[in-house]
Length: 497
Image (cartoon, rainbow, N blue to C red; front, side, top):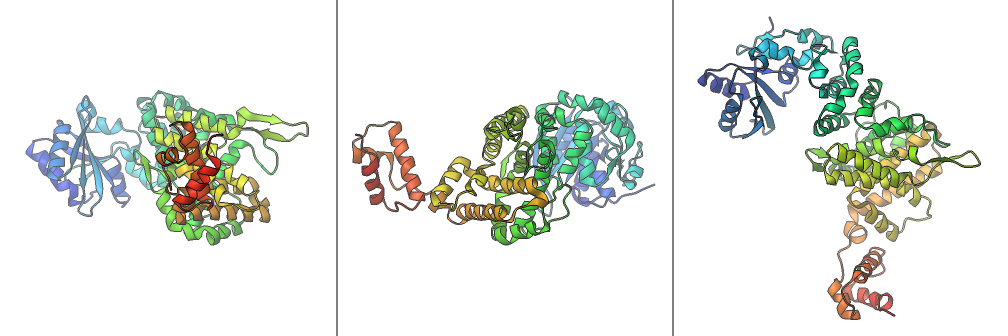
């Protein structure tokens, strides 16, 4: 019999409080799994004989934490406390399903999550989870596992990649059979599970698995329409394959900029020298880009995850805008704004926040803008200002996606002159964002609307806002630097005729 020594925190407090109340409690699920794998346990789950919510509240009080009821009907509560090392940890307490520990465990999702420990640390394993853990297998506890909770379909794919395991054949068959049930889950749960999947490195691997199992159309049906949509050179693949390559390349771009080793990619086939070019030209912004992507937008979801989601959706407008000219070339006129609207609608359906939806709308809608800038002989300060006026705080993300999009398009056929121009544009935009922000991106106003009305004798109205916009642009371009110069320009351009 396997025996495990449980850490004093939080087990001592949980066991003491349970004994005081005369109830049994068992560590279960992921905490047991990770302990067996000798991995750090970030969150704890406990099965409780009864009064689980009361025990959760008592544990929260004992550990100087916070208590939250999760499901009153199922007697489930959560304590959030700080470990001696300063980490915030969730401890979930749920009453036994079926009134029996073995019944409870066998009703869980996968065998490796269906194990428990008694108070002496002895392993309770009715589904054979330890053997599957040793063999790196993900196996459903029963044929009904996905019907009981369809969100387990996405979770299984995420866990397969996260843990480096493999979904065993019978479970894979059940996933394919029950794939359509994902649509029955709440949008919020689908959002959370899909977002967790997008945080994984080498994200294209679980995305391809979602596709293989037929799950992807039930999460984002727009992606299914990308398959088979042909593109003219320099594109080499259909829109779906290009999308996956862009996502994979994006991870390489971020790694190269932030000083991480660019590991062998799953699909990306850009020349090795391109990663070195990115590190050499843009590595100066490593700390800034790292900090930028780590900013949380909503619900624990950060800019890095949303950038991957934007990459996944960046060309969703292409199927609707596909056309072919007399010369045989394929065009996708206005696919950016069309795709931006589609992407924002999908995020709203998945219950992402308004800020997240608007951010994705901006990135998708503007993802070709750096390419347009690269055609100019020089990126002027005025052009930089207009770029960030259009992209706002997503301007950095658009730069990163644009580089990935370019590399995924050309791959080994990368043209040196065009690539050099793209790097120059990227360096210029990032330089102004991170080092000259108040000079060219968002210069502080030199005058107010009241100043303009006093100088020109104008009445309040939209004309005032338009004049202020022109002044801000002239200031960013370096044409005016003082209040006096700003007012002089207003006298020249703003006095009504």
